[in-house]
Image (cartoon, rainbow, N blue to C red; front, side, top):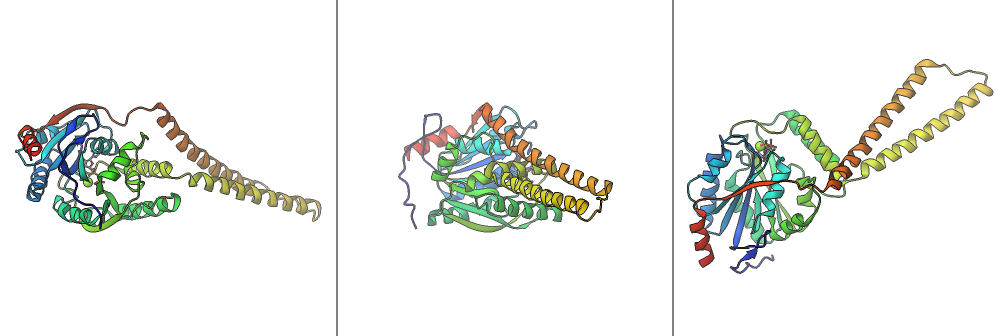
Length: 341
Ligand code: UDP
Ligand code: MG
């Protein structure tokens, strides 16, 4: 397919400075991952070194309170350019990925979790697909080791719901682990929204997509940063940022209930006046009252979700604040070599 190899040249980065040509950027958001980062860095750099291409690793320290950032800043020299961008506090993984994507300059970009659930050894396979001409390579979890049945069930239900409600086709069981071409990354970087649901945004630009199945390993150490409340928040965020269909369903529900009530009202009048049979009272009234009250509250809550999103977006606050950008000590030497090449 397409994708003639790009010429060895320099590119303008987001801050307007010239940066060396990079073929592959790997974005790694992390938050308090000190136990796994040494091994992660070792496994990732082993894979990248073997590629014999210009590669960069962009670590995003999402406000870690342990010494995770020091681990990557003082790691052993490697042939990749290594940069660690520390955010001023924990902004959440979506914001960390947004920051990472903004600073990449590779022709292909791969997003990787730091906890070794997404094996770095699959990178060559992803690059193969990209070289065949695919702009997005989705990594689909065939087996999700270390996850409860309930989590697997709720994840499957969530993808069904969001794909039914939104006009997007968000691939099922595909997390943030994927390869994006420079074109796709540029389009995502241009999107102005601040409250970002990345799995939706990755799919939004479209382009040619490929899917590779893989077995997702359990976390190397530590615990997932997502409890069920956070996951529900993320799911709600995903649905409300990509669809207004829930509002339409609420309107439809309102119309159905109102029509039902109108017909029932006519029936009550006929029953009382024509048949002389007064309506039996309290229980049926309570059922209708509570049922309707519940539906109304649900719809108001739904409206609130959308209004909340408008409220947050209207402030226009940035998705993240950068505290420091550290280039790996070994980088200067590597950078010169890359520029001379
Ligand atoms: N992460 C992050 N900021 C957060 C939470 C998580 O950068 O606020 C990182 C985390 O360190 C890991 C990745 O996002 O590298 C995935 O997080 P986690 O393993 O907790 O999520 P799960 O795999 O359970 O979906
Ligand atoms: Mg994980």
